[in-house]
Image 1 (cartoon, helix red, strand yellow):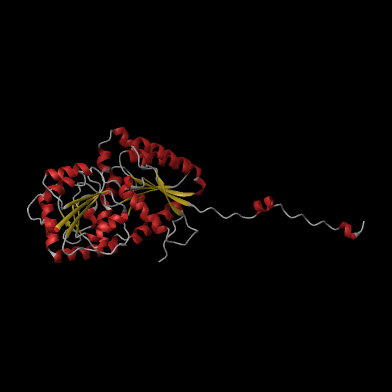
Image 2 (cartoon, rainbow, N blue to C red):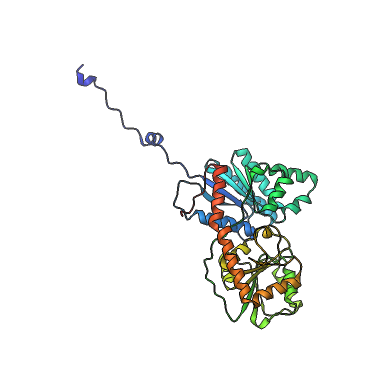
Length: 391
């Protein structure tokens, strides 16, 4: 046999299928799901998620995790929400290899039930999770539960690696009554973006703005009673009530009180529409009986709108009376009328509140600070962060 015939034959080129198996495949981008009721029914929780996702999308860093909304409620009935929840759970199961973590936004009542089921699924799948407690009435709701339901609630809130609260009041509750270890509780106040709509006030007309779900908890009846008291100038004042809820019921109540065409009822408004109304307002009023740290107050401060509100929830921990806002006690309609009228009549006071509010937003409630804090917690608990906006 000749030497040429003894030479090894060259190996055949691998088939495309074999080559594909041998070549390293690009890793799928990991996801952080933000579990929350989205849309109008989600209220402030949904706006928080929207703000964080929008901010993360400004980054060109494709190597970090992608923030994605996971609707756990839908816009239908409470019964229908269970089907939406099941769909969210199926999605998590199908995408589990791509999920870096789940950031669960929690309120009270059925939200606790739905999110507890989601926490149990994450635990079973080995998906890291953190819980963000938004509910203004969670502590009251918890204390009214039967003993067995309180025990189940405490067990559920031991499952996440971390628990985010809005302020010191909520931190004390979850550490002292729920029993979450203090080192797993993170105090992160809300943050909102800088205004995108320029101020457009009409110098010939004073505008009072209420934004929120029209309900007794938000103090709508207290506001209507305040508007019936002396000292108003209806010809040169407009009161705008922007929000869903029992609009027709409160409109009928206002008509029965003799409150006329200087009241305007908009129904539910989207974020851009709220921003436009805010740009025209002289004062934002929020006479709530219970709150966490409401975004609408922070959005008013960012826009440079004077605020009259009640010092409930976490508000008084961050905002100072007569400095960044004027406080009234819940249910005190005469004081509410006096404080709103002060702002409308005193240009110097209104300017002081506007400037102090802007400064507080820039130093404490900016979206960049809020997003940075949340990204830090994602890195801590999920070993990866969302895409972040470059400085």
